[in-house]
Length: 329
Length: 263
Image (cartoon, rainbow over all chains, first blue to last red):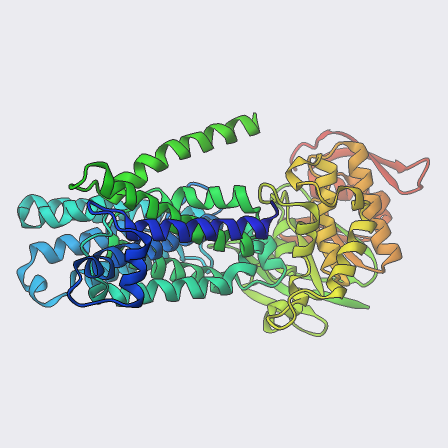
C-alpha cells in the first residue's frame, strides 16, 4: 500500500471504530438502532436517547481528544527534537490538575468557576510560564523547554499535593481526573472545549510545511528563512489549544501523545503533511478502542480510559523502543 | 566587488563578546576560507554573516542593505548556510532533504513548481547523488551524507554559500571530494563560497581568499601566500612550523613542529 492508501485505510478503520463505539456498552445496539437514532429519532425511545446522548458524546469526545493529543505530541516531538516528548513536559497536565484541585478545594472558586474552563486556564498558564522561562534568549532551545517544563510540573504537582493534604474535599474529583475519562460529559457542557481543540487541529495544518524544515534542525530551518521564534510560539500555542482542551475535557490520558506520533511516522513516513494528519486519525482510533474496551472489560463498571491507554500504550512503547534499539545496534 | 560584508561588528552569546569590532568584505565569485584556532570566532562570524546571530554593534550588509532589515526569506534566496554536523530526521530520503532547500522559493500560493523540481534534479546531478536519491539519508556514508546536505544548499539556488567545517569527520579522500565539489560549484556555477576549514594545507590549495581570525578579530587576510606565513601561523595558532612551497600545487605548505612557547 502506498501512503495515500494507508491514510485512507486508517480513516476507514476510524469510522468502523466510531460505529462500534455507538453500539458497544452494557446494552448493545444494532447498526439499525443507530440509523434509527440518527435519521428518525423519537423522544420516547430509550435506545435513541442513549445513543444520541451518552454514546454519541463519549464517541465524539474520544475522537477529538485522541486526535488532539496525538497531534499535540507530534508537534512537540518535532519542536523539541525529542522523540520522548509529550504534552505533559510543557507542564500542561500538572497545570490543569492544579487548577482542578484548587477549584475543588476552594469554595469561592468552586461556586463561581467552571472546572473545565479552570482546567484549560491552568494548562495554558503553566505552558505560558514554561515558554517564558525557556525563551530567555530570543529562541527557546529544546533543552531549556524540557527543563523548565519538568521544574514547573514538579512545582504544580507539589502544590496540588499540599492542597489535597490540607483539604481532602477535592480527592474524588482529582482521582476521577487523574484516571482520565470521556464518559459522563455531555456535549452541552464541553462544546467550547471541543471547539478549541478543533480550532487547534485546523491551525496545525498551517504549520505542516515549516515543521518539515524544523525537523532538519533549528539552524537549517533558520537558514532557509523560517522565522524560528514565531514558528515556535505558534507551535506552542497550537499545542496548548489541543492538549489543554483535551486535558480539561478528559483528564490525564497518557501515552497517546507519546506513542501515536511514532506509529504514524512508521506507517506514513517522515513528511509532516502526511504523518501528522495520520497521527490525528490513529490517535482518535486508539482513544475510541481504549474507551470501548474500558466500558466492556468489567461491565457494568468501567475502567478509566487513562488506565486503558496506558495498558495498551506501555507494551506498544516498549516494543517500539526494542525495535529501535536493534535498528541502531 | 562584494555582495556580503561586515562593518565593525561585535557579536557573541549572553554577555561574552566573541567578535570584536570586526570589519570584513568577502570577494564576490571567489572561494574564501576562514581559518583560526578553536574558539577564535570562526563559526560565530559565519552565523553572524548568515543573519542567524544578530550583532550587538555594527551591521552585516548584503546587497547594499542591512541583512537584519531584509525579510529572512528573501535573504534565504541569496545566501545559504550549512551548519556543522547537521542531522537529518530518521528515514528522510535524499530527494526529500534536497527538496527542503526550495523552501525560500515557495509560498502559500505556489507550493511546488516545475522549477523546484528542476532545481532539485540539478542539485542531485551536481553532487552526483542521482542514484542515491531514494535512499534514506541516515543510511548513507559520511561523505555521501555531507554531499546530500550540500545538495540541499545547492537546491536553495543562492549566489552565496556559507559552510561551517564541511569536511569535519571525513577521511582524506572524502574531504577532497567535498572540496572539489565546492570548487566546481564556485568555478562552474559562479557561486561565492565562504567556509570554515581546519586543515591549513587543504585551505591553501582551495582558497582564493583567506581570512585568519584571532580572538574575534581579523589577524590577516589575502591570498594563501599572504596569509600562511611562519609568523602568521605562529601568531594565529601558537604553532611552530616551517612554510615551504607545495611541490605540486605551488601554494604554501605548512609543516607543523609543535606548540609554540607562549610569548
